[in-house]
Amino acid sequence: MTHPLVPKIIELASPLAEELNLELVDAVFQTNKTPPILRIDVRNSEGNTSLENCEQMSRMLEEKLDLTEIIPGAYVLEISSPGISRTLTTEREFVAFKGFCVTIKTFAPYKNKKQWQGRLQYRDETTIHINDKGKAISIPRELIAKVQLDDG
Image (cartoon, rainbow, N blue to C red; front, side):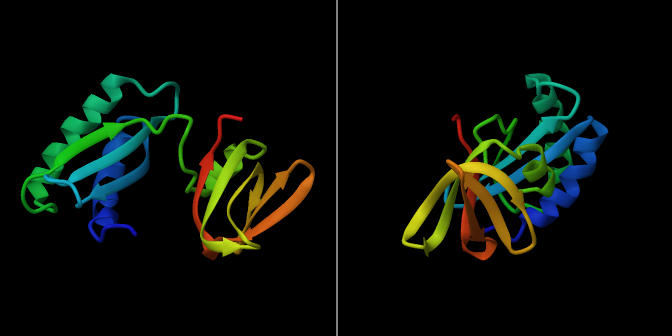
């Protein structure tokens, strides 16, 4: 479940990322930690995401968050790159990683399974399609908890 502040944080952080030629990939606010942790994943669209990219984004976002006071109280800000072993969320990622091995986890069992593996084919409005050793599998999107890239 996404924290209610995340959309506001993304709205604030996205233009800063663009200014640095970065793409905001994900934002998670973990309020079950003390102090809470705000983790922002950014990607350099022109090459590898460097430590300098993360540091620049951290300084700019921290300043902006402190000025707007969106997050009440103390928190920890973490800026990182998503890396290869990550969750797919955007349409762009589903297109870019077509043919890659993925693991799909569902909230509830679907056809008696809660985890599926195969090569990503495509995602449409209602379904994610994978291929498991030549067998086409279609999983309803409303059942999907996570789609993650595999090493295989």
